[in-house]
Image (cartoon, rainbow, N blue to C red; front, side, top):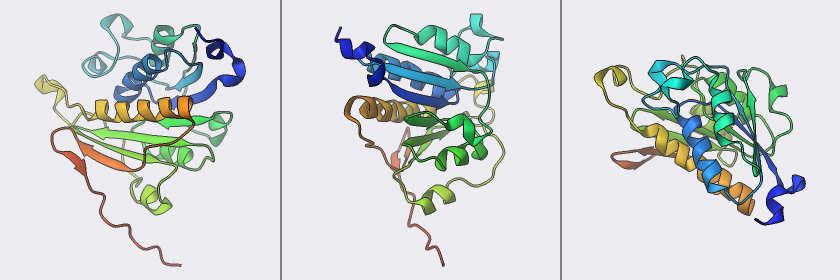
Length: 215
């Protein structure tokens, strides 16, 4: 193994906010994709594993009742990957200090806005049903603001879907985009992704024109 993988100065400090449908799959993809590169990843989420999570999140029946971040940290820590579990929810800007990259994959607008205000590269991953939406620090402030209105927390699974015995996979699209973004940042130092919307069945969707901002 190249010694670079264990060089403390080579480790990018990445924060993942959210360990649910998007976040748990994203962690698996990142750690597999960066199998030859050093990574210092903190995963932040105050939730515990519930039985209803098992259909679409990377947890098993043995994990029910445990903190999601503890389960993921234990599963993915290796000599290359230092994984830190943070069993709290994002509430204050001070929780975002000290990272080179931030990924937010939560179901509420308040933590998203905290991430949008930082001055390091970030990506905001969202999904509902078959669809997903991605925003990054490269996008126009008007688009970021218009796509982040106030709303109640919402699952990545549409109402009644899990009870009907199937899963919608928009979360997997979002996780794949986010994982590639982190991998490209760590390996190549670039941010390739910008705003996008996609439906798992119908492909890319359009945001439409940006609204003019009056002075």
